[in-house]
Length: 385
Image 1 (tube, helix red, strand yellow):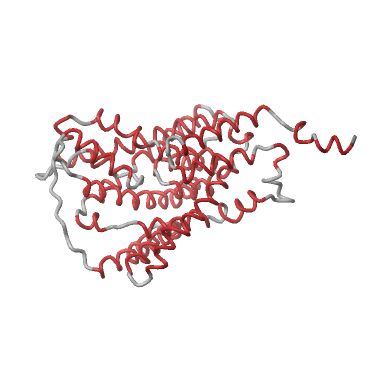
Image 2 (cartoon, rainbow, N blue to C red):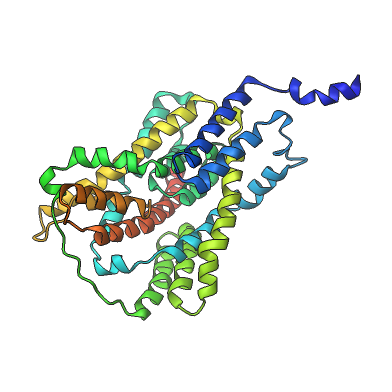
């Protein structure tokens, strides 16, 4: 009888909440396979959510006897190792030349981070109205960073400020990144006129000397570390990857960073994030509000970039197509392609892709800087309260 009882131990431990999490994991897997929404992350996240909600939870384990997922979490997430290694790959894939060709695109990379700070304030307001939710300054900052449209940055901030909410925050960040083609166009159309969407822009091709491209990641790293020391790992690893690419002397390392390193770490990162989605932490009112606020962050990111472009046009002779502002988020190159597609719908001969790419690259840099600012500013502000 004892052996029979052991055999059915998993059956007796089954809960209805497990079935709900299996459905959620299944939805993420469906979106990855059927809809091709961020499959490299949603697929392992979805399966990780199923694994961690299996009866007896042997794959996560406990502090005394950690399972495989807990070991990955402790060594890769809590130490920030996985997201930082991914930053090397992102840096190796990023070409800052379109930004150098049109430096004012840098402003759109900053303006499109507005949604982050708006969402932080919104989360604080909700936390003040409903204290039981536990939305303090640290938690609100972790929710707001979803608006960075940059998964690794969201993971780094959440792992420092709100590790218990890492699962829903990461899922929201990557899910909305995948849904950018659905989220952005209605917002852009609501905030621009047909004539504004038809504005053409001249792209001036410039030959950027190699020494500038090599010096750029070094200078950015040093300046960022001086202004916000806590952002040094984020900026440093991103710029190290870019330096590998631009040096031109370590092509094998550059390709390895872009392919093998990024693929392996993305695989481990995804399934580990899924492992944080245990039903006790995920099935709550907090999760629903985080998902809602994540959408708010993305909408206001887009709106902030478009409004800044319209404001710039009031003082500029060379008009900017306001849709360029929407490309200032970090979702690269998806946001730039959306802007070009919408421009072509209004005018088949309008080509603003390169300007949009410049703004998109600026958004990648801006999201990391915004993450560094939050990491530096929030503990200081919390000390004043």
